[in-house]
Length: 102
Image 1: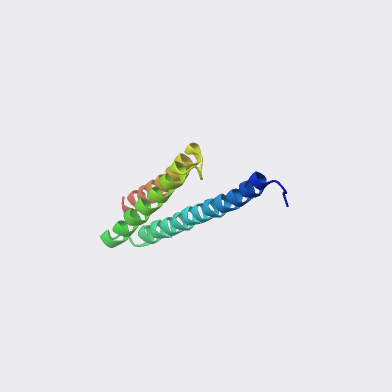
Image 2: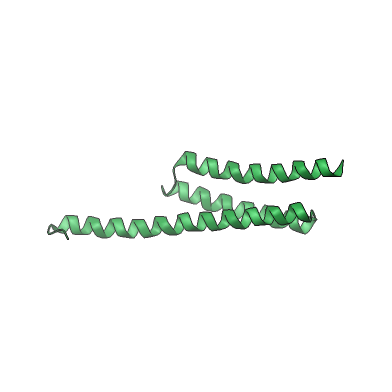
């Protein structure tokens, strides 16, 4: 443990920030998983309710990713990559549904 007062304070601040960052990262992962499961449900049963669920989950995930980027928890490019993966998953399922319908 540090003896210098400013070093002790920095350790406390670093721990506080680490816990805050951890909660944001965990929330982003959870929302992404919920979104991917909603997309799977939509692909197996393409109804309007399922699509609304997908859109709601996407909005929640996008919002949390944007907030994490704004607060410096995630890098800008990491946030963009995560949002791109979300959009790409939905597009892939929609293309498969179109192929199956024709």
